[in-house]
Image 1: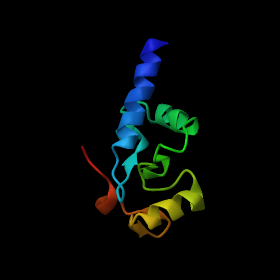
Image 2: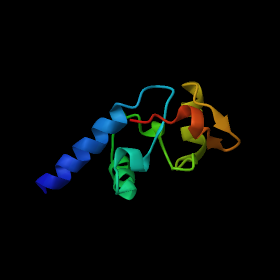
Image 3: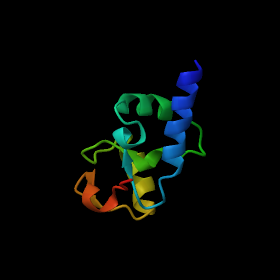
Length: 91
């Protein structure tokens, strides 16, 4: 269980380190296990900026609610997807 809690903490730290106006992908915050990042975020509380984590193609897992939060931060979109060329934070 310790290994799992370390992985959870690592994912949450990466999510929290994503600045306003930028996004990361699930794979960025959990390399090699993007679905794990989704599971972690599904169980988080309000102090985690979950809305800054998007799919690799820029599509949104949480739809209109997520889009509204991202637009309020100035994240650019191309149609229905985040413009990853501009908004993706690369480490």
